[in-house]
Image (cartoon, rainbow, N blue to C red; front, side, top):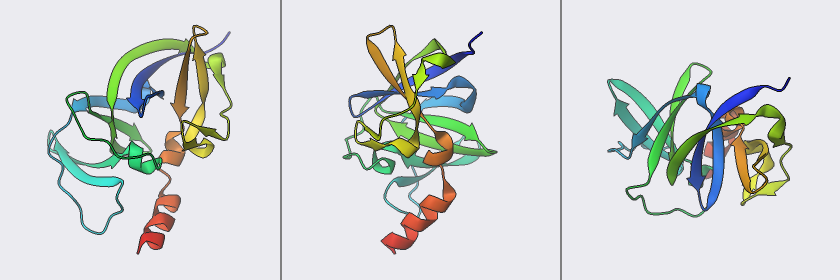
Length: 153
C-alpha cells in the first residue's frame, strides 16, 4: 500500500512546488528582515519569530531565478529540518493537498530553471497539475553554501 503524504503547495516564478507538511513549522506573512553582513545574496537575513531568531533564504535567489518584488501574496515558510529552522521566501503559499508518495517521479535535469539536485521529484496531481517536490537536504546543504560563499568572496 502506497504511503499517503500531506504537502504544502507554494508558488515560485509561475511554478508550483511542494514541501511535506511535517517539515513545515508555520507559514508567515512577510515581516521585517534584519540583514546580516557578509552573507550571500539569497540569504536575506534573520527574523525574530516569537522570540526565536530564524535565518531567511529567498528561494528565487537560491535557485538562480530572477528576483521579484514582494507583495501581499509573498510568504515565509518556516521549515524545521535537522534541528534547524529556516525561513524560505516564496511568491505565495496556496494550499495543503493529500497525495500518494507513488505519484512522485524522478526529476528531469532542470525544471522551471531549477537544477535537479534541489528537487526530490515531480508529482502528477489529477493528470493536469505538476507539483515540484523540494529536496530540503540539498536546498539547505551547508557544504555547498560554504563553497558559494568562498566563490563570492
